[in-house]
Amino acid sequence: MKPLLSARSRIALVLTSSLVTAMVSSAATIHTRTNGNDNLPGTSWETAKRTVGAAVASAATGDEIWVAEGIYHEQLELDRPVTLYGGFQGTETSSGERDSATHRSILDGGGTGIVVSMRGGGGPRTLDGFTIQNGLNTGIYCLDTAFIIRSNIIRANLYGPRLAYGAGIHVRDVGNPAAAEIDHNLLLDNYALDGGAIACIDASPRITHNTIAWNLAAQNGGGISCWRNSSPLIANNLFVANSASLADAGMAVPVGGGAIFATADDLDGRPHPTAQSSPVILNNLVA
Image (cartoon, rainbow, N blue to C red; front, side):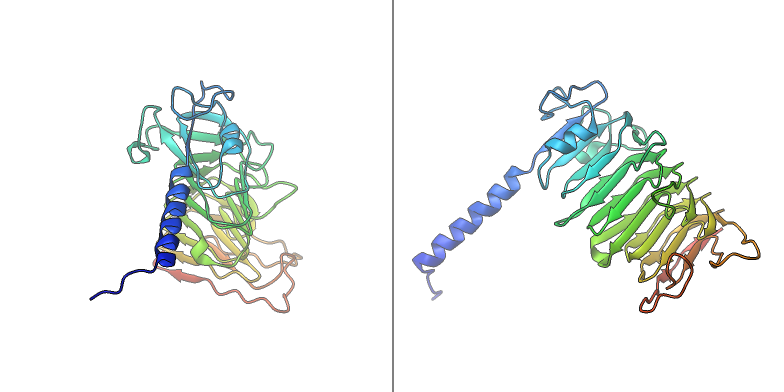
């Protein structure tokens, strides 16, 4: 005969179940479209907000933000765990119905700043199904945070006075690969001093199943550069025609790595006293 739960155990079970239900039910979906209105709540396509920034500002932890096709000239700060989905026509009732190849949701930095910044604790910030373009300093900046960057086009971003490394994606101070994923993206035509497409600085994300093409670094790592304590997994990617410029005779920093460059050195090219850099590079195609 199975033992019966005590009254205290039954009460604890009910309270736990109620808490989980409340957490699940509290997550909201906020809709955004170019002809929306930021004064509306965004709870449906009919009451959609006009800017992604307004949707992010109204989102709570765990919420989803659905962004319909169009160009959004914005620079976003994701400081809590939310999920941004692009690729909607503006009639869908499920995120699985979207088609980001047909309905492009474009976040354009206008050449004046970082397009999407991610930072802060908690669960991952997710960016899925967007075109990220015309960022200055970098397209996507990830600082000491969990993130998922998936199924995006990241193009035509340029380094600037604030950040010279990783014009497409700049990842810094992220030591847990399980909490940091860059997968199934297309990164092309980004230009940086180092790490034309992606730079990892004291960071070890999972970089998998991406196409990284026609990116340029003035010094190292046309595709990816890794500095100091950076040991990312770089697997199953396609690298096409990325380039790193040749050094002049007197340069202090090393130069190379059209596809991938990795070093334990500091950013100025001098040896770092404690750093270890050992990326795991598997099953990539370099053309």
